[in-house]
Length: 210
Length: 210
DNA sequence: TCCCATAACTAAACACTGTTCATTTATTGA
DNA sequence: TCAATAAATGAACAGTGTTTAGTTATGGGA
Image: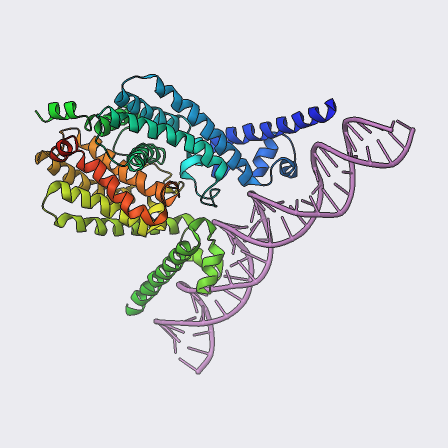
């Protein structure tokens, strides 16, 4: 049944083409401005054809969102190399914000957009999203063990740190960091991370405090 | 010219009616699901009539957003009563998150939605939005003077703290706090604020650290 | 009181959107 | 070559924001 497999391949290639085209258009104009007809036009098929490969527009967004979670997870793993727990956590946050700012459309889809998460727990996305969250929790735990961090409920601390980097990323993406010139954003992010993590480091704190 | 004034009054009353109706519908169904026709139907006028009072749909959102900024600013001021700078800052953050969670549609409009902020600096909103931000900066400054806080660039710290509470609020509003049951949200928010502010307090830190 | 300029309002249309379905076109195994 | 299956589409539907030409109501001057 080689033919059948080839058919399957072509089918998934078509899905891939639609996804790629959609994402490119999203990157260009923002996803609220992209229509099924736009995507169809770009790949030179009729709008109806897209519905042979995706149930609806939401399924396209949804699939791209999952892609985003995979990408983020891969990106996050780069922070694991560092030995010092606090530095690792710092790098972790930096990597998160970097991902968000370099892939604002993905990030938007994943954490800022409302709509396609309807069922509160989208299990598929949670699975992979949770993997990232577990990574963070492990990191936090190791910081506590190394005593560079006050002992506290790990979930609370992890959620807090996540909120922090998400807050920074999403305010910048939504252009609410208007008190800073655009070219200083990297510096601000760095300083903000230092503010959060370094001030939790007793030695630095004592130093700062004379 | 009493008539002319009455006409003006009626005009602004009509604007008010449209805004109120729009906001009620938004609160009910979320603003992406509300159409001009919905609003028109509710107030029993034709859709075209709305365009006599507002340039377009964006102007309605925009006006409601400004209302939101006013509300937030008023709400924020309640935190000023406390004498202790750190407690005041804590209350400040608490009030911010409370506003966000109690007025999610306003908050969405103000800080999470994309679209109507096109011109990067919307001067009107900035004016009132900036007032809230200045309030925060003053608070931060006073914390530094009281030495409950490490000295650092005030803008960076203010932006950091804002990011923090915005991160918490927006993740909860977008239902990304799925690791916590809904009824525990208030507790989490409280603990998160403590994590951020108390761990910046040397005494508490030393206590925690034994 | 009548008349008419002005203001208030609306029906109908336009150009879009996501989505569906009957129909056509292409492909393939027998 | 032919019937069966798969792939693609044209045309429509119901919905959107917005515009405009046309209707209805109002108020002041004659």
